[in-house]
Length: 307
View (cartoon, rainbow, N blue to C red):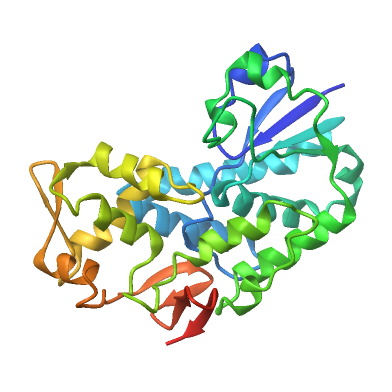
């Protein structure tokens, strides 16, 4: 059987072969867990919006970013050539966001449906915390052989509903999403919604974790990232993905963080926010299809509310 392995990163490119999973590696990596998710049926327009944001957020040249997005989309177009397509996606929001986009795209290709298999896990024996497939050795990955399951019609439907809700201009539908068909989706979506500014202090969860990390004194980026990972109830941001969060905090007109000599530390304003004496002022940014400000997360009611 000619097999394709679709993965939301390059972390398994070599390990899958060593683990005894032959086939071609097909990356699909646009991190739609961050930044704008445009509501358009035009793939080129979607890639253009995403390339603009990614280039700006990560200080990249736009042309190669757009080229990679287009190339990966073309890789999906070539899946018809395979007898079997295995989708490797774990439980966190990074993976689940890309998975619902992928299943929404593939839902429109019924000739491929019988060939699709999903391998999705949220834990692994002996790995606590379990972050993702990328932390597993080849011998550990080999134990997952046979765990993949056909993608069922209700999973396509659930993904399409969730993707439509993620790209909506308000987060209400997403907050009520039914995750029964995709068992890791509901918790992952809840983690995404926690990136809205909270009614308590105006901070997103990631912003708050970054401020708390340096509350006892200055720290270099690796230590801030580790503290963020340790405090996150469902980590999904890689180290590079945390940089735009930190940039918001220290490049704002009234910054909550200062960055000096490779160290991050609280400003007086940041200290006031953490002590409950001030509110972080959210400037325009995207959380999926939602352009902020305009919505907040109410942690007491566990729901989004309009400003």
